Image (cartoon, rainbow, N blue to C red):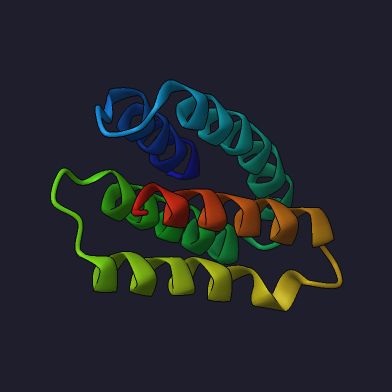
Length: 110
Protein backbone atom coordinates (compact mmCIF):
# COMPACT_ATOMS: atom_id res chain seq x y z
CA UNK A 1 0.00 0.00 0.00
CA UNK A 2 2.78 2.45 0.87
CA UNK A 3 4.65 1.60 -2.33
CA UNK A 4 1.48 2.15 -4.37
CA UNK A 5 0.89 5.51 -2.73
CA UNK A 6 4.45 6.64 -3.37
CA UNK A 7 4.24 5.42 -6.98
CA UNK A 8 1.08 7.52 -7.44
CA UNK A 9 2.88 10.58 -6.08
CA UNK A 10 5.67 10.00 -8.58
CA UNK A 11 3.13 9.72 -11.40
CA UNK A 12 1.45 12.96 -10.28
CA UNK A 13 4.75 14.79 -10.28
CA UNK A 14 5.79 13.31 -13.64
CA UNK A 15 2.48 14.20 -15.26
CA UNK A 16 1.98 17.66 -13.81
CA UNK A 17 2.32 20.17 -16.60
CA UNK A 18 2.37 23.03 -14.11
CA UNK A 19 5.79 22.10 -12.66
CA UNK A 20 8.99 23.45 -14.16
CA UNK A 21 11.54 20.77 -15.05
CA UNK A 22 14.08 21.84 -12.41
CA UNK A 23 11.44 21.72 -9.67
CA UNK A 24 10.19 18.36 -10.98
CA UNK A 25 13.68 16.86 -10.67
CA UNK A 26 14.02 18.29 -7.17
CA UNK A 27 10.71 16.78 -6.10
CA UNK A 28 11.53 13.40 -7.63
CA UNK A 29 14.89 13.35 -5.83
CA UNK A 30 13.19 14.22 -2.55
CA UNK A 31 10.56 11.56 -3.20
CA UNK A 32 13.25 8.91 -3.75
CA UNK A 33 14.77 9.78 -0.38
CA UNK A 34 11.34 9.86 1.24
CA UNK A 35 10.64 6.34 -0.09
CA UNK A 36 13.74 5.03 1.66
CA UNK A 37 12.92 6.78 4.92
CA UNK A 38 9.30 5.61 4.90
CA UNK A 39 10.40 2.04 4.15
CA UNK A 40 12.71 2.14 7.16
CA UNK A 41 9.98 3.58 9.37
CA UNK A 42 7.37 1.07 8.20
CA UNK A 43 9.36 -1.79 9.73
CA UNK A 44 8.50 -0.57 13.23
CA UNK A 45 5.72 1.99 12.69
CA UNK A 46 3.63 0.79 9.74
CA UNK A 47 0.51 2.86 10.42
CA UNK A 48 2.47 6.06 10.87
CA UNK A 49 4.41 5.36 7.67
CA UNK A 50 1.10 4.91 5.83
CA UNK A 51 -0.16 8.22 7.24
CA UNK A 52 2.96 10.03 6.08
CA UNK A 53 2.66 8.53 2.60
CA UNK A 54 -1.04 9.40 2.49
CA UNK A 55 -0.50 13.01 3.50
CA UNK A 56 2.35 13.27 1.01
CA UNK A 57 0.01 12.08 -1.75
CA UNK A 58 -2.74 14.53 -0.83
CA UNK A 59 -0.19 17.35 -0.62
CA UNK A 60 1.26 16.48 -4.02
CA UNK A 61 -2.24 16.37 -5.47
CA UNK A 62 -3.13 19.78 -4.08
CA UNK A 63 0.16 21.33 -5.19
CA UNK A 64 -0.08 20.03 -8.75
CA UNK A 65 -3.74 20.79 -9.46
CA UNK A 66 -4.36 23.06 -12.42
CA UNK A 67 -6.63 25.22 -10.27
CA UNK A 68 -5.10 25.31 -6.84
CA UNK A 69 -6.95 26.02 -3.65
CA UNK A 70 -4.40 27.62 -1.29
CA UNK A 71 -6.42 26.64 1.78
CA UNK A 72 -6.49 22.96 0.81
CA UNK A 73 -2.79 23.00 -0.02
CA UNK A 74 -1.99 24.59 3.34
CA UNK A 75 -4.19 22.10 5.19
CA UNK A 76 -2.62 19.11 3.45
CA UNK A 77 0.91 20.39 4.10
CA UNK A 78 0.12 20.94 7.78
CA UNK A 79 -1.19 17.38 7.95
CA UNK A 80 2.02 16.12 6.33
CA UNK A 81 4.18 18.01 8.82
CA UNK A 82 2.07 16.81 11.74
CA UNK A 83 2.37 13.20 10.58
CA UNK A 84 6.12 13.22 11.29
CA UNK A 85 6.18 15.44 14.39
CA UNK A 86 6.58 12.53 16.80
CA UNK A 87 9.69 11.32 14.95
CA UNK A 88 11.78 14.45 15.45
CA UNK A 89 14.20 12.62 17.78
CA UNK A 90 14.10 9.06 16.47
CA UNK A 91 14.03 9.76 12.70
CA UNK A 92 15.45 13.26 12.14
CA UNK A 93 16.29 12.59 8.48
CA UNK A 94 12.69 11.64 7.78
CA UNK A 95 11.51 14.89 9.35
CA UNK A 96 14.03 16.91 7.30
CA UNK A 97 12.93 15.22 4.07
CA UNK A 98 9.24 15.76 4.80
CA UNK A 99 9.91 19.40 5.61
CA UNK A 100 11.83 19.80 2.34
CA UNK A 101 9.01 18.13 0.39
CA UNK A 102 6.47 20.37 2.11
CA UNK A 103 8.46 23.50 1.36
CA UNK A 104 8.97 22.55 -2.27
CA UNK A 105 5.30 21.73 -2.77
CA UNK A 106 4.32 24.93 -1.03
CA UNK A 107 6.55 26.92 -3.37
CA UNK A 108 4.77 25.47 -6.40
CA UNK A 109 1.78 27.62 -5.52
CA UNK A 110 3.75 30.86 -5.67
